Each structure stands twice: as C-alpha cells, then as structure tokens.
Length: 561
Image: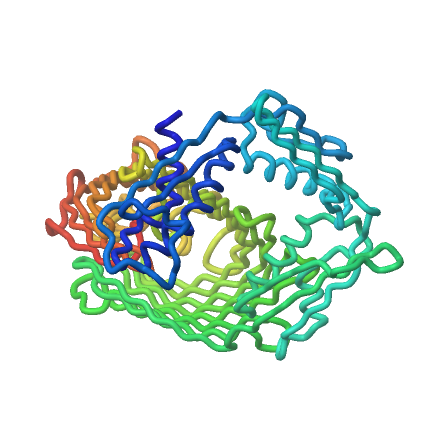
C-alpha cells in the first residue's frame, strides 16, 4: 500500500516537475499541500499530515515577498494516516435498474472518485429515462475518525419526465436552419434521452459543413414538458483542395488531387471532383492510367441516417493484360447504422470499351451495387488493434457484350498489439473475389481479378498473375484469393520496422481452387510517423511463382493495410 501511495503522490506533485527558480519552488511547494491532500482523499485517506520544508522552513509559512535567493534541500513528509472505509453509502431515490459502481458500498475503501462515479451513474440513469433535469438536492459526507469510517448520503430530485422540444441552431450563416434540423434528426415530441443528443451532434459533424458542433440542453424546460436543445455551430470553409502522391519502382508514380465544396446548395450538400494519374514513368506493358470522377452527396435524405449520392467516373486503364476506356454513372443511398457500420446500395450504368488478347469489345451493363463496411480499427492510417470488414456485391445485367451475373469482393483485416506499451503489432489480411454467372470471355475485364503489386502481392509485377486460356490468351480470372501478414515493431517514437509476406491465387473458375495459379512475395519495411500518418517504405522480393524483375520498392502514406 505504501508503494501505491507514493505512486499516486508522485503524479500530483508540482515539485517533481523540476522547477529550479526559488520563487517557483516556493509557489510549487505551497500548491503541493492542496494537491497531495486531494490525492490522498482520492485514495480514502482523510486524516493526512503533510509537511513540506525548504531548507528547514515550512513552505506554508513562507511569504511570497520574502523568497530565499536559493533553495538547497527540499523535504516532503507525508503521514497519510489510516484508510477510511464506507460506513453508509446511500443515494436516493434511485431509478429502476440503476448500476452504481460495486466499490460504492459499506466496507469498501472510501475513495472520492468512487463517490463521484456513483453520483454520476445515478443521475445518468434518471436522464436515460427522460428525467433530463435530475439534480442533487442534498449531500452529507461525514468522516468518523475513531471508527475510520466515511458516511455518504446523497439526495436526488429527478423532476418531471421531459420530451424533446425544438432544436435551436445558432451561428450558422450559409447552412439553412431547416436543413440543420432535418440532418440532426432530433426526435421532437419523444421522451428525452442523452444518446439522441449525441447522435444529433454526430450527424451534424459528419456532414463536414461545420468546424465545430456543440449541443446543449436549455436551462429550463418548457411549461408543456418539452426541453429545447441549443446547437452552437461554427461553419467550416466551404471549399477545400487536396493533393496526394505515391511511388513504387514497379507501378511508377501516381498523383491525385481533389476539389470539394461542403455546402453547395445551402443544405450541407457536398460536391467533390477527384482526378488521378498513375503509372507515370513506366514502360513496357503497363501504361499511364487516369481517372476523373465527380460525387454529389446530400446528407439526411429520407431520414437523418441516410445520405443520397450521385457518382460519375471517366477512366482510362492501360494495364498489362488489357486496355480499357470506361464511363460509369451511379445513384444510390448510404445508410449509416452507427459510427462503425454502414452500407450502401444503388443503381448504375457502366459502359466499357476494352482491348485484350481476346480482341476489341464493347460492354454495356446495368449494375445494382451493394456494399457494407464494418470498421472497428482504433486508427485508420495506423491501426494497432481491431478489425475491418468490407463486402462488395454487384449484380449486373448485360445490355450488350456480356451476360447476366454478379461480382463479389470481400476484404477482412485484423490487428492485435502486444506488450505493456503495445510496441509489437501483428496484422493480417484476407481478400476473396468471385465473378458468378458469366464466362471469363464475356466478363468486363474491369470485373476480373489479377494479382501482383502493392495492393495484393508486393514483390511481384503489377497485375502479373491472371489466367491463360486454352488458346494462349492471357486475361484476368473469375476468382481471387489473397492473404497477407505483417509483424510491425516500434523501435522509437517515430520509427517502426515491418516484416511481411503476401500470397495471391487467381483462377478461371468462380471460386479459387486447385486449378488456380499462385505466387508470393516477402520483404521488409520501415515506417516514419508523421502527423498525417506513417510514411511507408517497403522493399519486397518474389518468393514463389512468377519472379518478375527482382526486388521492388514501394513508398506511400499509411500502412499497407
């Protein structure tokens, strides 16, 4: 117990911060009386004696106007006294199914944080039942020193049960008030619940139209039993631009940029243009690719947690096994279940003009894309724990050049860190893809699967693995299985080293099997931590299958997965 007391006091003492100036030492010592006593109260010691002497003089008795020129010796003597325990621990009235901390009961150490936690839990439970203005009416805390006992009695007044009133936005200049109320989705007329206030705040924040959002309850309830919620808003700048770059020895350089408008029509609508040029500086079979896309999004459509979107993209791909020019337009909705889980569905039209070993072909497809994402990583760019699951399912109807079928792609990632400071991280990834319903020769090359490169198997040439037809034509496969594992070790605050192994299998069948072709790669990497995420440098070499050109280099921002 003595060691625990010393540990608590050492975290609260200002003298231990290394102040060298005599005047600062006196001020720190005089403040430490209060800090040390508060720390001891927090552990249940209510009869402490604290002495802080600077060169033999009690700091509490020193005048701030007669500070010594120097201080040579500091002595801190703390007699914590006995630890008190709860005698009576009562909070009343309690709401049904209240869950007070187990340490708040007779016989347990009478720690101040336990009292505070119990009070907060009791009030929060009343608020969850709609009694938003629950307050403490009386509080009696009595220390019985001979018995080393602390008696605690807290009285509550829940008041009356309230319903949500109006949301009252303040500070908005360009975003319309009616749209703010619609997006927030505060359930007016329903029983108050603090979670609904948090949800409304989150909905407004994720629009990106506001730099800050603060929701607070009105000081008083309305005579009709409703409680208004006040929203203090600070709008973000309407326009934003951004740039990105990545470099690999195999896939060349890629540059990207975007332009974003956060409040296009006054209702927090987003309009975003994205442009990307990749494979710059490459020669041989892999030419320059480019993509231009536009996305319009309207939050809070149909209900507060459903966003409407329209997306269009024009793309040119000069890949090792095919050349494609395509245009796609899609409209749909995104349903945000919670901050971890969302899904979207839509209706799209895809046109693709392609050239590959089979010949020159045109495809027109009606698509019904669906995707779902469950993201429980602790950090998007540098996860240490958690997992990420994504599923894309796109049924399609061939209007010309293709039959009817569906494309499935699943991506699962998991992370687990070890050690007291979690400096070692084990990360794994599994990818699965399948095209069903159409033959490999009548499937849009964009829908087929390839392996090799930074997103699948590092160390292998980009999209080097597909399938070879009986006639010798090389195209993508109808199925793909990919697996990656990384061991990441933090060697300093800024530097992390990584070892990795990647595997990929592509098959002409709808599901990966024994008839597929596989390859693998392995390597080492280094990460340098920045405020934007880790800068990634990986060096990889083939370990199985097509060996390509040997060692490859990959540079980017964020972990590989």
